[in-house]
Amino acid sequence: MNLPLLRTNMFDITEIFNSHLPDLVTGYVRRPEQIAFAEHIASVMEEGSNGVFEAGTGIGKTLGYLVPALISGKTVIVSTGTRNLQDQLYLKDIPMLMPLFPGVRVSILKGRANYLCYHRMRLNLKVLADKSVDLSRLTEVRVWSTRTRTGDLTELLDPEEDPALMHLITSTRDNCLGSRCPEYSSCPLYRARKTAAESDVLIVNHHLLLADLAQKEDALQALLPEAGVVIVDEAHRIPDVARQFFGERVSSGQIGELIRDTRLELSLLGNDDPATLNAVEDLEKRLNRLRNAVFTNSEQNFNRWYGQDNRDAVVDVDLAMAELAAQLERVSDRSEGLLQMLKRTLRFSDQFAFLTEETTSNSDYVHWIDRRERSFVIHLSPVSVAEDFKRLTDSKTSWIFTSATLCVDGSFHHFEAELGLNDALSTVVKSPFDYRQAVRAHLPHGLPEPGDDAHTQALIATVEPLIRENPGRTFFLFTSYRALKTAAELLRDLPNPVFVQGTMSRTRLVSAFMDSPGAVLLATQSFWEGVDVRGSELRCLIIDKLPFPNPSEPLFQAQAREVDEAGGNSFAELSLPKTVLSLKQGFGRLIREETDRGLFVIGDSRLQTRSYKDYILGNLPEMDWLDKPSDAIEWLREL
Image 1: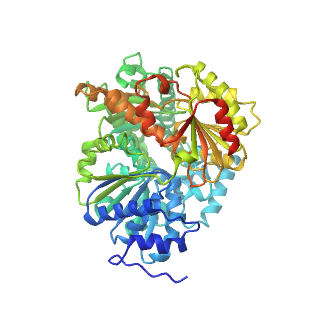
Image 2: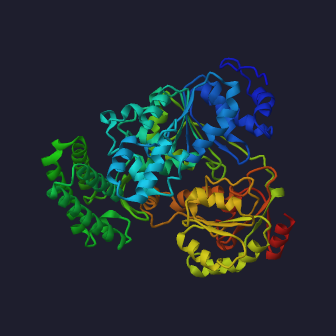
Image 3: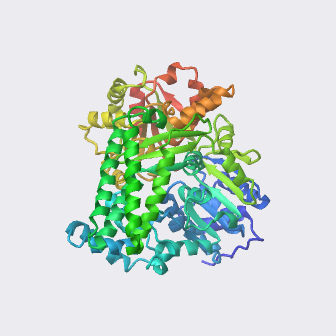
């Protein structure tokens, strides 16, 4: 196939999409909406301005922004919401286009937790030589390490499957030795960073992009000053991710990692220092007591939690870290590793002391506790990231934000206000899908209002016949883990294969779902976006209730208070827009291609009674609503 090489000063976007892509992309469908979207992107790049674009499902926004990026002649950073989407861009989408752009240098860069650390792997091979299970896994990684060209661990394993193993074979910002590491010259992370610095187009994810912007990764050279264009895909995630990086945080996981690494160093030296070993053990005991105190009290506001008889647990950890630092200072000249442990302990001690002080009332920051399955994080987060982002988007770099869900009620105001975007060019490119033909929607009558198990039980009784009659697969999405667990118990006798979030890793769960005809997948909001099961014959999407923000969540409370104190209405200006954007993301799982058809069910009776019902429904695609369960079953049978 002889394709003309396209030059940056000689291109016609319409010609690329109409004449060249059909020869390059298997099954390519020409869409006027995709061309219009690409032309908008190219225009913003050319002008050096900022842009915000909602691209409806089915437009093909990935190719829509990649083509202008590749022909721009500028250094372009593309930031995605997930590692999976990074891999899709780098391994699938961009290679399809490269015959047109053979001179463009493209690379991918992930966070350090995705790359093998040879130094830590070899240290742990020595220490775990007498533990056959861990040793066998480490040996498997070592064999792979002799073959891999990238050191990207996703080539070998699913990081979610074995977090304990990941601790043994990856570095963190805290334990990385940087240029002092004996494996520095062959380090996959630093090789990837060197390649990234020399690229024309670089694929990153939001966490890595924001770590760089907030300078939270000391060893990572700033990428942004050299970029002419930053394209932020899945941009609706950016405000929430940004709050993590433009604030301060310390986690029990970081302190636990410090404890494990100090033990490792002491073990390598023969465990001949009982005083330091005792200090490590004491810190571990006090950290466990603090963890118990955090998990026996569900208060999220740190000041209130601290004042509820938890001061002693905090002070104990503070004192234990000071004691460990004193012991490490005494022995740090024994090895480079112990010197590193001393530096980390001193840094964590300062960070922990700062983040566990009671804060005065400050409307600009929220002091809160985030509890996870096995650990907790103490945050001091900015209520707004608008000023931080405004400084970035006022630079010479052109910023382009795109997603299928940025617009609420025909306006970008909510998104633009969160990021301080005052003069961005914005437009909505609507989906080419005919939802009125492809989808029927059903809102069951007679359900109690959401809020307790009675709602979940009534909903399951109503939708179980629909699931049984569905000839394809079913996605059942929930807004809480409690509802998910209740539903999983009630649906355990279904003849269909039922897969439940939390029983296996996300990757394996989606793979098992797609491999099982008639399968049902039960999941919470982390599956509402970024999960693409096109080609799986997904025929029914059920959402248990409207995804309103949790009113007790500290960051949301602070944002709502800020709106109300300024004379606004936080429900109308904050709760409803966030609900609409989340609901649109969930709905977007159902129709992914022109040939898809399905049933959408939402089990929230408030859409029949509350004043905001028209606002919510008006932000969903236009489709026909079925009143009777029998009509919904008939539609499924037709599919």
